[in-house]
Amino acid sequence: MGIFGFFNREKKETLDKGLEKTKQSVFSKLTRAIAGKDKVDDDVLDNLEEVLITSDVGVDTTLKIIERIEARVARDKYVSTSELNVILREEIVALLAENNASDNDSWELPSDHRPYVILVVGVNGVGKTTTIGKLAWQFKEAGKKVYLGAADTFRAAAVEQLCIWGERVGVPVIKQQMGSDPASVAYDTLSSAKANNADVVIIDTAGRLHNKVNLMNELKKIKDVMKKVLPDAPDEVLLVLDGSTGQNAFEQARQFAAVTQISSLAITKLDGTAKGGVVVGISDQLKVPVKYIGLGEGMKDLQMFNRREFVDSLFGNK
Image 1 (cartoon, rainbow, N blue to C red):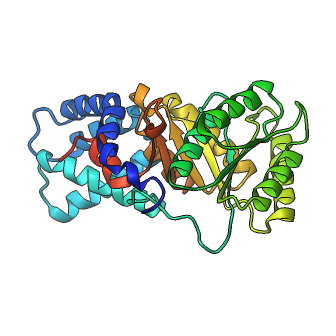
Image 2 (cartoon, rainbow, N blue to C red):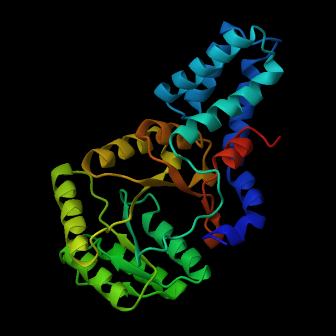
């Protein structure tokens, strides 16, 4: 069984509960959009466009979805409003599939090398360190040996928080003094993890965006130093975003994508917002797959993203 796969029995209930606010919002807007209509016409499509945009799917992604539905309507000649929900699901799932969003609930660590190195980026306050802690716990529960690196040396609170998570989970945290070179922390972490046959290394980084040049140089230096220990590191650059911020999350994603290559996304705090549509828009606009979604405070509330289950939950289970 792959990583995260052993939580599947509880996953659907957590997903439905976590997306409840978004689902209620989308449902009420969708109901109003088709009120008094028996077929999908221009008015319904205009209303649907407004529903998606106000659900934080984003303008560009919304127009793409509307174009797909228009093509379906033109091809089929007659599409009833009762069919719209099904078509909407299908087109959003297809869009997420094009961006490599998974329809699996688990995955296997590569067997050809160890450790697997995840470099985590994101601004302060998005749940970055909490996501790292939950990831570490779930990897450990799957029987993996995990090391954490506290390379956000800009904030003492960030190092302290990561150490608290390390103690809670029971995994080692490699750290240095406040203000130390983040690349040096990354080097020490990988060296120690390699020497101790670790399976997974997760490196926290500073979340500053006020100076993009400095951030870009810092991330490049961390990557370059990593490669001195493990030539293929990092295996994954995970961008953590706060889903409750809606369009602000879009902007953060664009800014980070401009300074470093992002390979996967974790979108947190979806349980406290009606802006769950942002998951679809960010994945589409960045062309980067959503890998994890955060649906609550519990350890198990960080889930592997499954595009079909997400869309089904978002628009009401079939």
